[in-house]
Length: 283
Length: 173
Image (tube, rainbow over all chains, first blue to last red; front, top):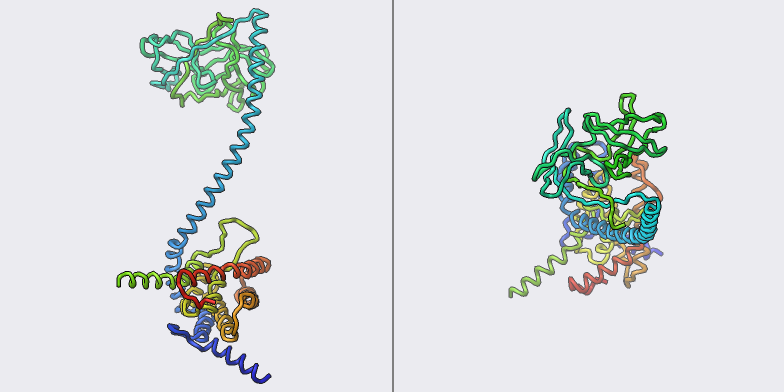
């Protein structure tokens, strides 16, 4: 019993006091140092604070360098995670595409059915020729809201052709030169377009204001036009094809009129589509 | 002659890798935080210090361990000297185990390591909570101890492999 206690004491003493090769301090002395650090640090001793500041400087700079591989690892992990997400997203999109393809087929069938029915009621069918034009100049004058495009009579541009920004109506061609044309925007004071307001199918005239929005004019069912109603071309007077989206009713303007916020931002036009709708002869 | 010199240089670099790893682990807070796992953390420096104090006490100098503890205190924001104290207690435990062990075995080492880290973390918890008024999550501490203990098996074998086949010291066990 005595011997085992002696062994324990010897082993412990050796652990605390024995210095290995190349060891400058014994464990006991370093433990002593640590305790001194702790006690002096808790009393906010100046020397400890200076040492702490010095170590802070070294640690912050070196931890930036040391953390580079971990950052790399982290970035790689995130990249892999993103790839994994992309794969899942791709799978989801694929399934959505299948659904859309099915819907497209259904849509095609409805178009064909519509054409057949139009033929039955002797309505005219339209086909369109599209010319893409670049906007050369955008006249932001308060009196004239128009743009100049780089296509003219050489490119078979005619007066009255419809100008669109994507699927939205922008205006119509009012002046044709050999290599350029002028387009009168819907926001121009002189622009008057026959439109239909959906829902409720209210026929009316859209007039420009010379500003960034338009207004509804000459409508008998004025009260039927609600906020957020969508404006389409009515096709009346065979000026435009029916059903081209233009904008929506926005009653947030400070006036009593039915204001229209255009879908297309006329100040941001870079390229436009010049379209002519003709009665289809093949049908 | 040049080949011998370059071999010696490589061996010298390899033998200093534990110190490098220790400093990287304290400076970088090596705990795979970026994985975003809620119930996962381990203390790599405890494993490294215990293993090398037990098997190759000349690889990690006590002074380096003391300095690494000070660095760790700066990184984690604990009072200066506390981590050093814990690391050195770990060294004492490892050194004691080395003195009393005649036939080393991994299981014995692991059990002793578990007891040591339980004592160390209890000391850390008590001193931080009651003396320095730091708030610590008891549950996180338990998780950290558990994973540190479990990872000791893995890292012990890895370090053995490193010492045997890369550094070329066969008395690692």
